[in-house]
Image (cartoon, rainbow, N blue to C red):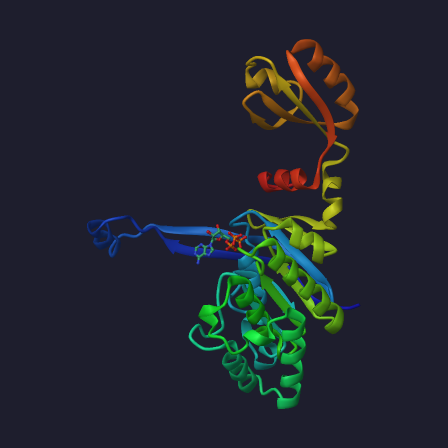
Length: 327
Ligand SMILES: Nc1ncnc2c1ncn2[C@@H]1O[C@H](COP(=O)(O)OP(=O)(O)OP(=O)(O)O)[C@@H](O)[C@H]1O
């Protein structure tokens, strides 16, 4: 399949001003303001094929939302190239806007005081959707998401999960080719989270829509995406399958052990890279070839209580990635 999204050397820099607390400082700030720069996205490049579902993972502030906002034309890039369906999103052409949709788990597009059906009707007019197509699509989506009977309930009276389902319906009734989902399961309980995951999977199968999804929940990415892009401090630190994420650590292993008495950290650091320590419990990262020698030495030298050698689990791999500037 061909590429539908191409991103080349994309940067986003936010310029803002320091605001000090207090009335006096606010007044002072009118004349002398300290300019600050935040490099939210730093030289990222990737491509997405038509029909692909790609998951963006990253700690808070990694640059996921900024990237999605640039892909959808909400934000102007500082530098770099973006092509989505052949359009440059920042030009905000009408035909581009008709073919993609963005849903943000933390923002609403539905009118709070009206039932969802009215917001859907408004979208029908904006996107000039044929009545028959619209009715069919609303039927299909409300059935799949099991919210048909809630269409005429005021949005403010819906639960968080029900509201997210309505948001998804509102963003899909015009059958966009590309869908950006920014944390669609945030704050949802496990069942609602699974409902949304099942829906996205089913919808992608049916319509071959290209989906880029950001989430803090690895579970969302695991369930929905073959490919994961992991961001850290504005850069892409991994692009590939989630389960292969540990490949970038080579054949490293984790030595986990508990000590009987206090030992200085710099002594322990001589045996391997300290990944985690809590009270007397330690996790060291050690190269596969050094594991045996390191384990023997550790058991000989230190008052070790409990001891284990493990592969790096995916979660730990991701945590390590989040902590690293570059891999
Ligand atoms: N309007 C803004 N002005 C200044 N800095 C901003 C602005 N918006 C975002 N940032 C900064 O840019 C960085 C990236 O933010 P972004 O929202 O893209 O991260 P994220 O990966 O989506 O994080 P989260 O998971 O917390 O939503 C952060 O350091 C954030 O503080």
